[in-house]
Structure formats: structure tokens, C-alpha cells
Image (cartoon, rainbow, N blue to C red; front, top):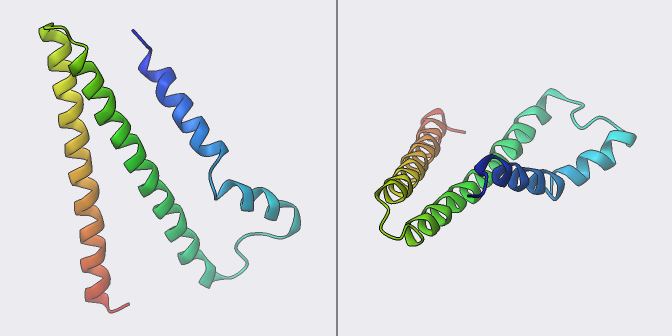
Length: 114
């Protein structure tokens, strides 16, 4: 069976290497600092959070696809079926938590007025 740790390490390495944020960071590292004013902190943090949010969805879909693969190749083995069900359950729970966190952020932002 394929080692899950190696699988996800390859995914994360690929995302970091080909990320759209990595290239500007490398280019600006030689010229000037990315943040020169206090007003630039919030947009930088928002970009990082959005980037991590997008990475989360890629990994969550990957988990669901992997769980579906395990389920389809279980061949009647109860252990593999239970493992696949757990993966799907954990992916759905984590997706619900992220959606709630994003909703709470929107509610707080609308209450504060900015």
C-alpha cells in the first residue's frame, strides 16, 4: 500500500514550488521588502489566508478521492471499507469547520462595518 505521508508530502511540495505567491516573493526578496508600511500588513495576511484556504480545499478533495479509491478497491474487506468511511467523515467534518470559520469571519466583518 502506498505510504500516505509520502503522498501528501509530494502534494505539499508541488503546491509550494508552483505557488503563485512563491514567485513574487523570490523576485521581491532581492529588490525591496514586501511590507514597508503598517497598512500593508492586513492585505498580506488576507492573501496568505486565502492561499491556505485554497490549499485546504485541494487537500480535502484529494482526501475524498483517495477515500473513494479505497472504498472501490476494498474488495469486501471490512477494514478497508471502515478506513475509507473514516477518511470521508473526517474530510466532511473539516470542510464544515472551515466553512463555519469563513462564515463567522464574514459575520464579524459585517458587524464591525469594514
